[in-house]
Amino acid sequence: MGSGVQEQRASLQGEVLPNIHPKTKDLQQTRSILNSIFSGALAGAVAKTAVAPLDRTKIIFQVSSDRFSGKEAYRLIYRTYLKNGFFSLWRGNSATMVRVIPYAAIQFCAHEQYTRMLGGYYGFQGKVLPPIPRFLAGAVAGFTAVMLTYPLDMVRARMAVTPKEMYSNILHVFVRISRDEGLKTLYRGFAPTMLGVIPYAGLSFFTYDTLKKLHSEHTGRPDPYSYERMAFGACAGLISQSASYPLDVVRRRMQTAGVTGHTYGTILGTMKEIVVEEGLIRGLYKGLSMNWVKGPLAVGISFTTFDHTQIVLKKLHEMGYTGR
Image 1 (cartoon, one colour):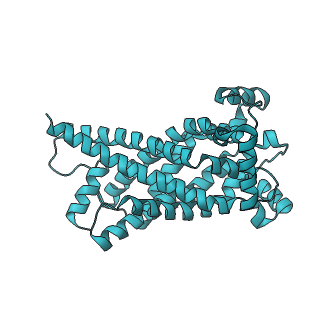
Image 2: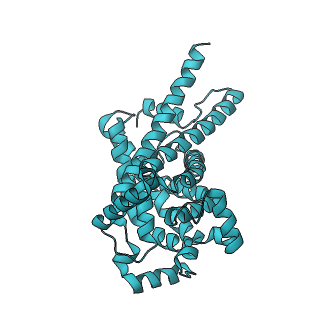
Image 3: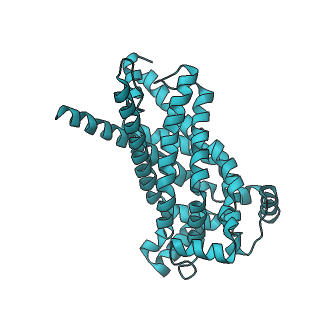
């Protein structure tokens, strides 16, 4: 990779090139972190809002024993629209935003920081990491984000599968779960989530960065076009979500057990019950075909939004310096 590409990537990630004053270095690192937090938050919000109706439909099928098909998914969406109106398709999206904004902000920011740390350790500062550290940076970033925001994901799942009469708002979900089921219920499904996020986040960031690296080497352009970023993100979403999908089904079953009448206890026990009642493919992979539409779209939008926001913030900063 040429030096110009290295400098551009280093600048985008907030890396500091040699011969920079320590105070300037600290300022650049602080600005890089703030830019990553803002860009990640915006990326998560835009992506999740765009696919919210499909995401809600997927969760409803995941936590029920009803057989999934594209036709049945369409019927569910249409019935929901006729009964409760257009915006009911986004029910639970407010809880999603409360969860996804800090989650995405933490994940993208953590990924940048872990990439910098691993780059320094392996001698790849400012450049694309080797394959294993590249996967590790994404996996640990996802692990960090989930660990800090999990109760919000629990709340979002409950709101997605229940009528408005049961939970009126986000705070009401917290209050009722704490009162009726105990505080530990807020972490039900935590273990499969943590296990699932390692292949999901690891493969997601790994695939996206790998495709960008191959694109740069093949074309000589350090910045892919928007549609190319979308395509790279879509591939990342397709691979990562397919790899971690059974654990996603398990965590949804465990999260919503209090309102579906089931008593799922352990990961293996939940998997066994799903397979016995519904079969391996129809149970643990229920809704995967919808995820092949929703997932790539969401991840593509997320990565594209993050990259472009970073670029815009960098240009605004440069214009600010030029205008002084």
